[in-house]
Image (cartoon, rainbow, N blue to C red; front, side, top):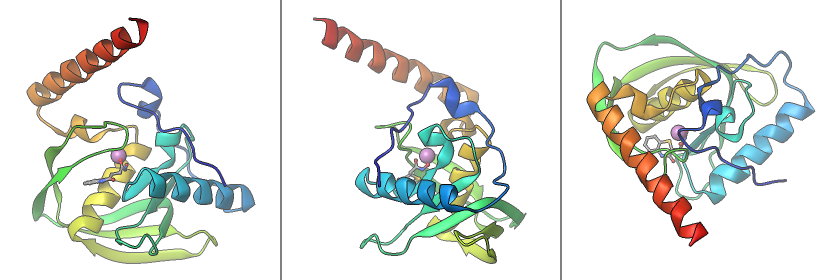
Length: 173
Ligand code: GNR
Ligand code: NI
């Protein structure tokens, strides 16, 4: 087991598009274990492989308080989304300290493989729907702040770059 390093925006590697997993084998199952451990210790409710610099389509999610309801989504696809939308205040382990409202479909139908390579198909709503859309965005190289208006996105970018500069200055002083 291992805790993996989480990339932080604006790292260009967060914008790579992840490749489909060709075979769910022990290598993928080990990646899933390490990603789950990394998510639990962060702590977060979801993690996409892109965030740990692995550009393959693997996602882990656990919305439970007890951290005992792990969901594994390999090659996840959204088969359909409702016209209805919901707004949720999102955060991201790759954009620490930033929380912004994002509008997404309120219900989605999802198809994915599990850690045994079995196909699962299900409907999701509420926070699960938010989280799955947020994670699939990561696999497509998109971070949630790119879902905001360009004005908001640019303001946040400037704020994040400024925070980073100040941090760097602290460490050389
Ligand atoms: O831990 C997380 N919380 C969260 C809250 C609202 C909407 C989405 C998320 S996902 C985030 C973990 C993360 O960055 N996953 O990519
Ligand atoms: Ni995220």
